[in-house]
Length: 509
Image 1 (cartoon, rainbow, N blue to C red):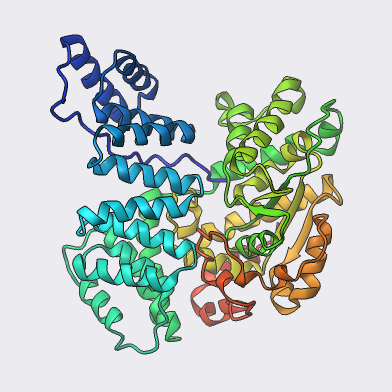
Image 2: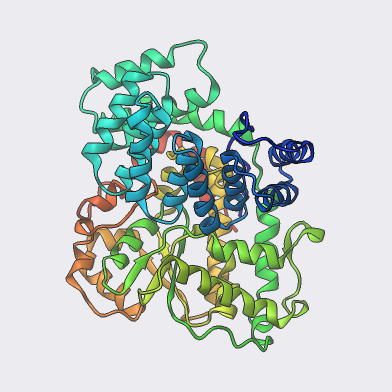
């Protein structure tokens, strides 16, 4: 759908005065590498940095910057090693320590990431970015009291850091309009010099606060303000997604897939959890990962990236060609490489979940390359799903459809048509689980879910909220509590404001 690479780049560290004397060509090469990296020419930058390292250049920035190149090109293990090497040359190098923390986050080693941030704060207690990132990791671990204390400290130190206000609002329960945080946010909000991104953060935070107070008109006012500002940044239209999904439905017909002579991988390790964002995918993953034989992979972009890079043809607007025009080994390599990547993530668990929503685009490819993988489809009332999407200030740019009620509805209709297609051409290979049924009859639904995934019953799956494990998505608060139904039919409180959405959802096919 609108899955795109995040274009944001980490700031490239400019070369400081070197501790060793560089030759003229080396100094020129270093300057050229930094310029190339800043311009996005990563291949040139990598070559230049590697040449400097082979020439025994011991400048920390060279190792740090090459680590950033590796990180941007999916070589996280090598990146981590390079950040460590930069720190071995200069233990006080804050940028390298921050990048090392990020690398640990990506590797799922949050304790080590938190330790890195603590090391930064020990020498730079005013580094609110390090404190904010550390608080986010503590929150993901379920250490909410610690996280909240750090968010509050950031807001005291730097009241204008609106990201902290936004994230804090997600873990704070507002009980009255005189809540000091609401008062502080409104005061900031009325600042005429407030930048667009800051206003977006505060808009979504205030919407959450007023929803807690059940002041739904005021909540929607701030929701619409924040969404309108984000929509202006992207100017999203449905056309390209509509073309791609039509192309997928046409290309992955039952006849085309059955005509391929592809054996595929025999492994049944992957469990793909697909569905619209905010449809219950995090909850389902948390339930499954509470089982002793399942590891929560989270939103992995491995399969989608492999599919996009090998199969979406730039010459035809990033769409699929007929399936029989691709070489057999391309299909097989997708399964092989995917299994290698999840094995690096966890080599012990019998199953690994992958809950990237965009994998619904690749279900046909999953079925060809990984025919024994389980596919769980999370289904939720489209009105609640779309409203919940509209309420999210997503950290990623991948959900560009999310910031307008009409386009959210259009996108949901495309997704619905695509999933209906997959059920038609792959009958019996996709297990649907309904969010409403799961929250109302958890034991019945969890038993059926485990059975569909080939897993025996374990009580821990019913007590999922008590299990350890990271939760990095917007659903972290729900999955730290027992099952509840307060999000069911929430759209009714906003019905008066949802006409553009409801018109799309009710439109005939």
